[in-house]
Length: 227
Image (cartoon, rainbow, N blue to C red; front, side):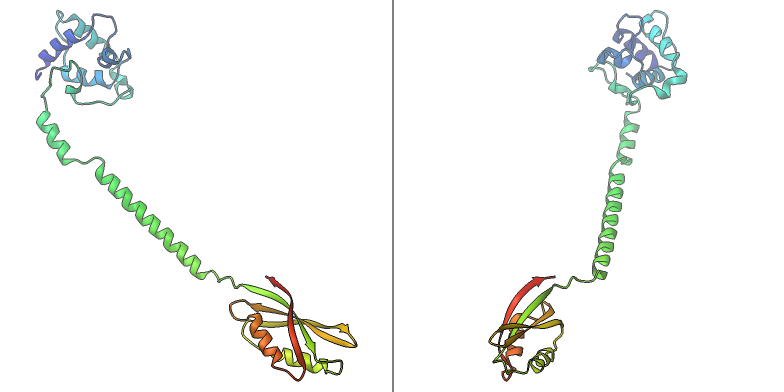
C-alpha cells in the first residue's frame, strides 16, 4: 500500500465499527491510543472521506491527542508492522533498508562499553598489584623456651649462659632466662628466644648449644609457640 487514500480505505476495513478503536487496541485489546496510532495517523496525512466513516472517526479521535502524541505508550515502528498481516506497505522500504545497513545502533556501543569495562578492570588490577607489592610480607615467627642442662653442680652456670647467648644468627633474638633446680644441687638454664621460622630452627639451636661440651650436657625444647 503506497498512497494515503489507499491506506485510509484499508484502515476503514481494518477498524471494527465501534466508537473508540485504536491500531494496537484492535490486535491487543488494549483500548488506548499508542505510537502505532501516531504512525498510521501521520502516514494518512489528511482526513479520510466521509464514506470511510470508521477511518474518519478514528482519524478525528487520534487528532485530539496531537499535543500528547510524544507521551503515548509504545514504540513507533515501520508502517508495514501494523494492519492486516497479508498487506505490505512498501513506502520507504528501500530507504529504511539502506539506513538499517548503514547504522549500527547497538554493536558499536556494546563494543565501546566492553573496551571501557576492560580498561577499568585492568586499571583496578594494576592498583591492587601495586598495593600488594608495597605491603610488607608477613614473617612467621616462633617463641621457644629452651632447657639447657649442665654436667653437674660444679658447672659454671654464668659461663654456660654466656656461651648460649654468644650464639648469633639472622632471625634469632635471645630473651629472658632463669636457673631452675633439677635435684642434687644441680640447676638447669631455662632461656627464652624468638626465631624467624624460615631462618632458625630447633635443630640448629641444639647443634650450636651442645657444641659447648665443656658446660652443656644436653638441650631440650620446653615450649614452642607460634607468634
